[in-house]
Image 1 (cartoon, rainbow, N blue to C red):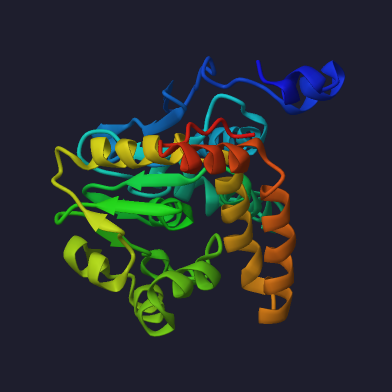
Image 2 (cartoon, rainbow, N blue to C red):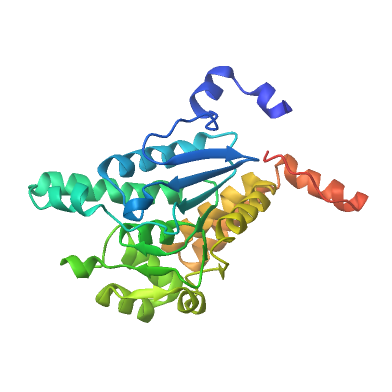
Length: 286
């Protein structure tokens, strides 16, 4: 136990620090190893669609990650050679056509809250994407920090194919920042599938991997991130997200304040001592 934990008031720790390695997921698979949590959407017979229940559980779990002391990076993937086919046609789309406006808004806010929770959690999220990545699945991939794909992956923001606008779960704000306004417009207006090699050229995918290696490669990246200065990584993620709405002057000042906070960490001191001793620093996230 480090000194900062020993100095922390137990009541404050109880409300703001928790371990999630033992979390028992109900609607997907969840495991934690070496500080890396892996979320596996696990309905391979249907290409891993989301349901009302899985949406809500994912939203709540990503919301809890900001308090986790034993998870420092997250991998999101799908079982059976596909990532996620979007909202389940029978368990979501069918019921939605029968709902009135208040209930429909409850649903769309819930789905948006999943993206908010993914962006607000301090852990970097690496998506391992093979096969079908469509609709809400494409949004989950978009909301991740890094995306590892395969040549056979097919990513489609297909909302207009079902008579809906492309402005779903933050797509019109986030996708143009990843691939550019013109390319995002094409994907959101047409709903066409973005192939793996094209997706890498466009910058949607950070890299392409062999299908049998994409999950392991994503987990290796997540382990590298989890072994780094995790407090500082969380600040980086926060600033990458918040600076979208800042002027350059505001961003420079916000980064000055954020970096000054990081300079107070033990990890900053550890890095200096390791440099002087000519060895690799062992970061502890404090």
